[in-house]
Image (cartoon, helix red, strand yellow):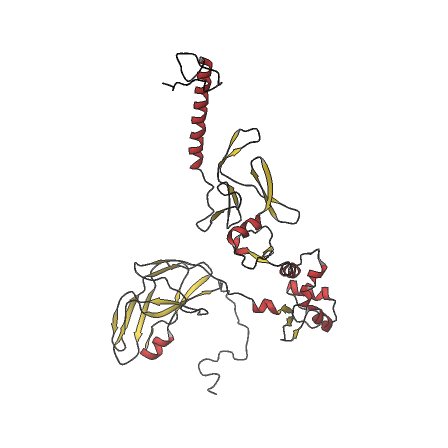
Length: 390
């Protein structure tokens, strides 16, 4: 039964006795229609809450866009999505915005932009700035965002960095992009460059003068990485040599329970340490197969090379029978270590002790071509001892 009241819940007119919630049957029907519409609307909201834009992979992370929390998110892969929310239109109507991936538009300069709507008002944003604001810290409050690989459509967080206007201009010059500010473009010409034979010049302009070229000519060879015709030598910016980073290769591994994932013991170490799964006592000149509890999916084009640890080999005489051991990229079994005690004393290997190391290296696929004769060399078929002792 509806609650009694003095005025109609729909039209607001006074209600005559006996008092009810509505003044007429029409108002009662109108109220019922509104309740049913609201029930359907809430049902749609509940269904929408279950919908989400699928991630590309496990590495994709979403964070809210500042000022649009709960409505729009940006990912570290440079994608933007609508979360699904209720938007109030200008006429007071409620609009249900479904979760979706926003379409990005490329500007004439090659940047990606998206359009976000809030309370009926639309605003355009550069995708690279949304990603940088959400995922990249900016303690020095640098004003611009640079694409590291110079691809303005690649808006992954790993490809972006905060820079000053001057740093951005230098990067633009390096990759051949025009910059409207000629004063900033002169930064390129002030960077020291080094020639292939080791001679260093204070700037590209100084190197150009030595080669009899214009500043623009030497910069062209710097960008392309080609040799200058006059000297036949290549040039490189000194900072490119100093700032060169070691690439980080990720491989998928599976460990036995309680076994730590192999890692580089110190920064700069080439090998990943391998540990013994169990304790062993190895008698003099005895071979023992040591389990590591470690399996790896080495990427195609790479292989693992297992070698002894120098300290263990020298101080205790423990080495690998087949050093170095080769782990092919198609092998998925446990990596085992055939240890050999070359000393005249028993050697104890503790569970969890680091006794070997594995290096992940690249290799080429080789095809053998049979011929009647091999090219001749000065050494020819000279074998063991052919080069002498001294």
